[in-house]
Image (cartoon, rainbow, N blue to C red; front, side, top):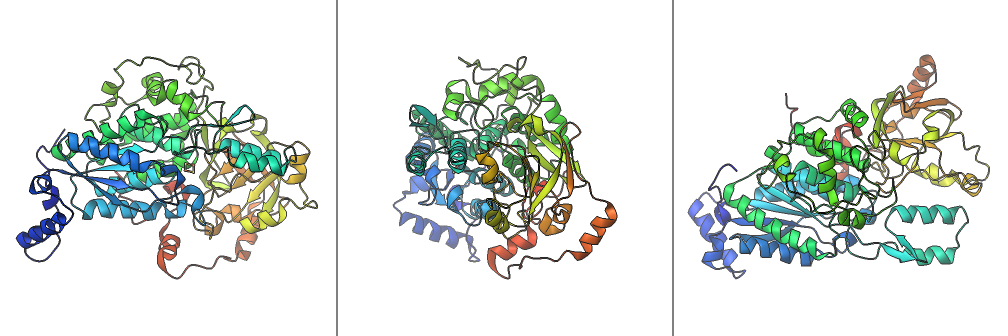
Amino acid sequence: MTNKGKAEGFARGLTNYGDRDFALYLRKSFAKSMGYSDEALAKPVVGIAYTPSGFNNCHRHFPEMLEAVKRGVLASGGLPVEFPTVSLGEVFLNPTSLMFRNLMSMDTEEMIRAQPMDSVVLMGGCDKTVPAQLMGAASAGRPAVQIVAGPMMTGRHKGERLGACTDCRRFWGSFRAGSISEEEINVVEGRLATTAGTCAVMGTASTMACLTEALGMSLPGTAAIPAVHADRLRAAEATGALAARMAVEGGPTPDQIITRASVENALRVLLAIGGSTNAIIHLTAVAGRLGIEIDLPWLNRLSDETPVLVNLKPVGKHYMEDLYAGGGLGAILRELKPLLNLDCMTVTGETLGQRLEAPIDHVDREIISSYDNPLEPQGGLVALFGSLAPRGAILKRSAADASLFEKEGRAVVFNSLEDLSERIDDPDLDVTADDFLVLQNAGPTSPSGMPEAGYLPIPKKLARAGVKDMVRISDARMSGTAFGTIVLHVAPEAAAGGPLALVRNGDRIRLSVKNKRIDLLVPEDELARRREELVPTAVRPKRGYAKLYADTVTQADQGCDFDFLRAEPQS
Ligand code: FES
């Protein structure tokens, strides 16, 4: 590692009084009011970005994890000091958690920079918290290591394993189709999420945990440890110990770890695990903080040559606890070794290649396929381009019905989320299973703030007739735990005047996954006429964070970060 001897501890970044000695004397005096001794105050300081919240079920076990992190810091000669930041509990936020990811990232960045810490442990887990912390830490530039919450254990219902949130959707679909009763759905509600931790499948939180380890920003072998497993506490302790070492050594810093090469490794892992579509947005935002651009043709190139190896819901059968028992991310990385950039630096100062030299004691081939015998020969995600999405759209092909991949259909259009919820179940809705459902005005600058609404429900009358999947297109996102032939993140979005805004009921749309295209089959002169008629419908916010968000959020292909937070592109 570099920059030995950089620890400044409590003397770092003094409050400005125009007299440095006075500022230090005053700071120590106030620190002593918390009971610290001179000896404690002379140690390197490890900040701990700590995000429990009564509105965040996924972080319920953070007090116990915090103790373990602190134990590790203290045992290694550092002084652990936790500090709160914004916490984002996925299902407790309105209109949607994505809108607040950038707020949390700014909070994290500024508190790391403003407070006297020599390194920082990032404690996050629920969907948006890990990307927010990585974005903030990347911008702050202080040595940082992530420890994630870890996934929930599965619950049981009538002898069947249940895990949030793929099974939440499956049971809800059955309820809508009339195949289970209201009494049963009420029972299931209490059996889906039964322990602390993040969603139990390869959703956004688990995907981000895997990408963080693949980037090198967390300790090896930690991504998949269940939240309630004793190994997670040991991982937390080891993370604290590492952070104390990083505080003394002054590195490595996030910019030494998150590079174009390590971002490529993370993209490979995203594709191989059949990970969440949301992770594309988050990884783009994290990389963008260091001037690394992720363009979607790059994703497609990698997707064409990266196999799907992991048999986890929502794409496959199993749960995160099975992935941990079956070898974890370490086993996946070892399979992907021929495709990875092995000289990338990680938080421990080792390269990824050095990490992967250690043998692994067991790999369950039911959960993790070998590179030579993959579940799918190509990656789980594909970017589509065409007249409907000039700047791209995303389809999770590993979670979609391949019989719908080469198809032309008639558009059935909903111009907002409200319109969707009012009309989708109308028995008189003119819709067939061969139609394409189109949702407009659910992108980043729309009033809904790009919610996970891209998984448009199958209209009730079709669901009751047994229809399980349809082509659905929107500028919204989709939960990482969902599945279906769902085209998302259409850019530019409708609210920014993208072609999606010009689609009308009855238009023809052609989807070709083979050609990576999504096209609106309407003559250009007709589109020009419709463009003239477009009237902005949304009222722009006039104050506060909502105004900052609406004025500066970028499109999905730039990670929905604020334009002023992104770094200049690296040449
Ligand atoms: Fe927190 Fe799913 S609700 S990860």
